[in-house]
Length: 97
Ligand SMILES: [Zn+2]
Image (cartoon, rainbow, N blue to C red; front, top):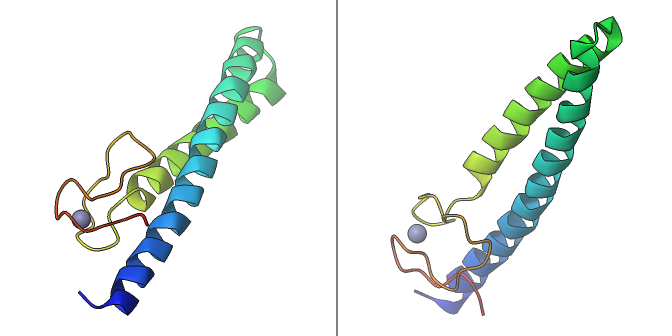
């Protein structure tokens, strides 16, 4: 593989790494918000029920985005739970300097 292509892969991996870290934070934040909104909704609040529904949709969207983002830039296989890997576990391409 030529160095230019390798650099492009590493750059793309870093971009996906950042996006995935942000998405993980987002999922946790939405999850916490959802818990409180659901508790409020259980008390019969219409606004809280609406908020619960919105947060549920946001959680599904963020989870789905995470699922499609955290993939190898070359073979597009899932990179697993670890947010830092030097090589792709599937195709073996180098992902970090
Ligand atoms: Zn791969």
